[in-house]
Image (tube, rainbow, N blue to C red; front, side, top):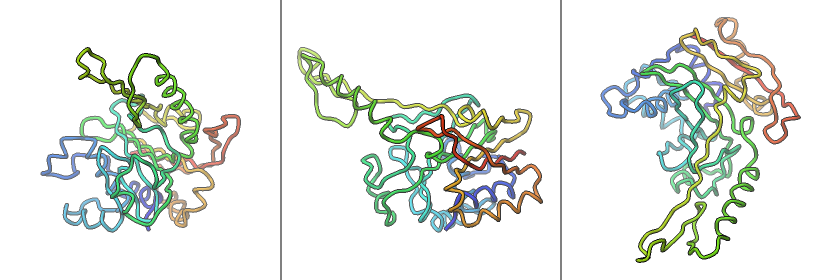
Length: 280
């Protein structure tokens, strides 16, 4: 079972941030969002420099599910984490989560996931790993890996706001509503009764470099910056963590340090975590 540590080791040893090598001859390469997803899949499966046919085989052995644009998550590791890959083009841009609010964990009962995802393996919940890349042209300039439990608040925080807004909309008098999982749908707006209005939540969250600027600053003169934050409890579950620690002696630009990060549900409390960084 491969995990985050394997991906970081592959990143350091492969030492490439070139997205133009992804999926040559495939029209998907013209979309850098897809190229970033393929880069991430190659990190976790250690399948750089293989033919596309061999990459597909490696992906099949590493992942239980590879998703689509319509349903989270983008990728699921076999017996491991759920992964959401987000591409931004500016180093300071926020992440667009669209209709899906930030999540600490992914439940198999979540109404937004597909049946194929639900049936991919025997699972109830998975930790969510957000992987954010800043793409410039065909180069990956910055990459961050951060778990939802260290990045965003618990589900109830977002649901409370969502429910209050939804209830307020539905209590507007003189408007015909339909049941919906969105914020609301108003029917029969025009005299013919043929027009309706859908109201959807569009969630955004500040990017991890901005959120964690108090413990990490990118070297903007470097060709590539990598940052990863792993909470202490999660770090202790990663059986191969010593493999990463031993790699520091060979790769001096790989740095691993102990930090305190603000608890997403109570910023007055600091949680112990590992900060991992690397430059090219």
